[in-house]
Length: 127
Image 1 (cartoon, one colour):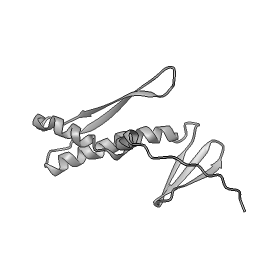
Image 2 (tube, rainbow, N blue to C red):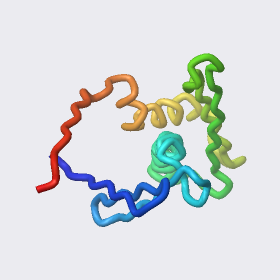
Image 3 (cartoon, one colour):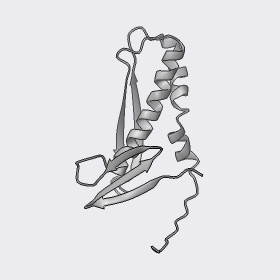
């Protein structure tokens, strides 16, 4: 089991310590919110698979760009649709269009949304 630790340095700040990284979040707009990081993890995960796809085939990546657009359900305030749009350089062989989409679909973050882990919560007193 891996270990991630969350600290509360004050106000609405929530800091994460994981694998030697220190990630700051808050709800005041000074740093990304946890939900911002969630969205960024989806896009960056798909992006790394697109980048790797091109690199493995010696396809130029200058100008390669991924954008993600979000739609929310007005009633639930939850995401209802994510569109990931990959812009490829002119040299990109369009015969690989479906293959690069298939590669981006290998994103582990996305896979966890379709096969979510079980959550358990434990509250423990300070000793």
